[in-house]
Image (cartoon, rainbow, N blue to C red):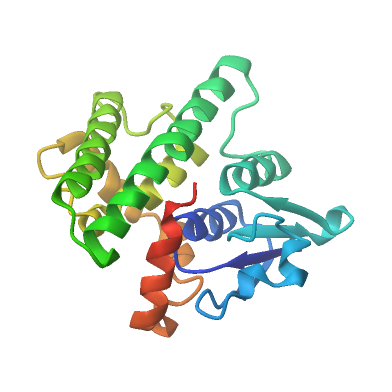
Amino acid sequence: MIDLYTAPTPNGYKISILLEELGLPYELHVLDLRAGEQKEDWFLRINPNGRIPAIVDRDNGDFPVFESGAIMIYLAEKAGRLLPREEKARSRVIQWLMFQMGGVGPMQGQAHVFYRYFPEKIPAVIARYQNETKRLYTVLDHQLEGRDYLADDYSIADIANWCWVRAHDWAGVAIDDLPNLEAWVERIYARPAVQAGLEKPPRSIIDEKEAVEAAKSMIQR
């Protein structure tokens, strides 16, 4: 059994979607970001960085894993799915996972904050993060030319990038001029496990204040 500690952010959805795709049993623990629950001592023992998501693998001696990319690799290896074993194929998936962790997540996260929530609207700053997010989207669009998924077969790299790209409107970045990317977003959204993972936590429990705090947390990788 996996304990999943999460909140409604792109990084949080990466893990709930992956768990649904893998069919691994898990127990959901929704942290109250407004109350700072992620900074409490009990959670810092799981994730010293005080961010979501994090997991505890009860079946492996209550082993904690933090950082969403590291969690994805751990769970895919545990289940033996969505991360190839062959050396080159595995490397390709991890490269596109790191592309999200080091590029799409940080840049789009900043675009969310400055476009939506920062009290002072600074056009140059907003444009800087929106333009870089669009550039990264264009890289994804080129990679998807002639293929359904980023590393040919559906993988953790697709889940990781998709959880951010699906929120492109929230960053004020359009994708209607990126047809490969737009089709990929729809293709992945049609997966039942993806739709199930988006309901963990249920969107119905998210109020506006919580959504604001969740968006602010998106500047994490």
